[in-house]
Image (cartoon, rainbow, N blue to C red; front, side, top):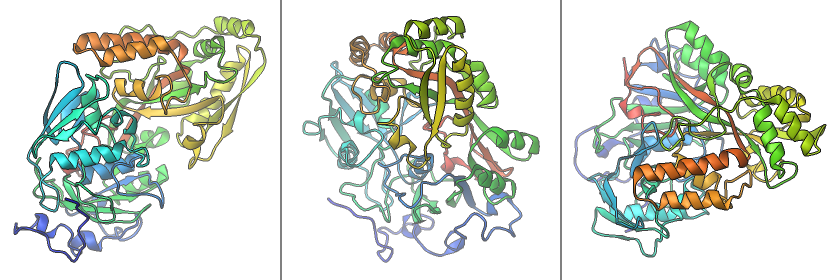
Length: 524
């Protein structure tokens, strides 16, 4: 049955008491009267965030093109909004293992190509049950390249013609190739479950802990507690996610009591919050991989000696100290330190300027000019570029930075340049390797290609035993570490901050279950 978002004039089905589904889109009350801007309507409040039973969280917004379509979630604010409105079949623990959410259980056959997912009893906000047909519709839509889901590549491994609903609460997924890491796909960003047939997200219906009230692209999103949520009702009655694109605006809004939660604090803001004392920092260690991408499919980095020279010649400790202001750890040229599947027996990459200079000379590249693409997207990149330029001069390369607009940076570096800064937040290691390191993958921006690496990755995904599978992943990563051109020079911390009246939130890596878990927050 095709279902569309309910119009405000249509009654809710059922007859449950407030604050259940019959009143979730009522226009009145404190939330309907709240000011939409950060600086309006809150000056007289004495408690942080505006007091009462409303929780306000400030994020960098994505502008006028924003949508509440959960399958298009490029930014953290999109994921926070999706987590409020919708549910996924699974969710990530802190180490990026899969944990059940809407799925009650999953199991595969011995080949790893057929996976049965059993759904728990849950309802959408309109009172209809979450069914296997809803799951199939959601995954087909997210697997369509035209949708733009960040999990599109992983979901395209499903053979949807062979997959089917096996009863109202059971789905049989048939994969095109064996994959014993498939449960991590069920937790991926952009895999949220929506009602079968949904195409319009102007007044969306999900099965998450909050229901939709109002939203302006680039502006404030407002939600109300869903009393009938399968995992229990949120502790707060109302949630507002407000835009504050400048870090200083988020910081000042938190310190002045206009918001309860300020996302993505860095550098000087972190130090100020530590000194201020009344707020609480939520610091997730090693949450973001800071990367220098060297395009091995183009000159000059098609010469592996120059890739190796940069690996050996950069001073990672200095980069952490200066570019990250000490808020991070030295990287070792592999994504996912501390996550499930990361090789634990790696020796640290020691700086060796003499060997780097020798490699540059052997490549005939003394004095070679190299341009690195950078942007203000991440506050660490421009100081990192300046420091790297000095470091590379020590072994014969001349690095200059080309600063691109933040609004178009990531789309431009897909095709332009030979070196670029990039970051990746926490994801399952196996999924990262499949999407960003495997030869020919759409998001493999270094153009790395290794038949040996690809073969080990395939063997890992088709190996049923957990420890043997992780061992194969470790072998594959050690090969890619030296030749992929993906230099992880550091892991930066992720810092969010909350006001003094807030409890129920803990430090958690972005993309994990407990990050931005606003249904568990308490105020007062």
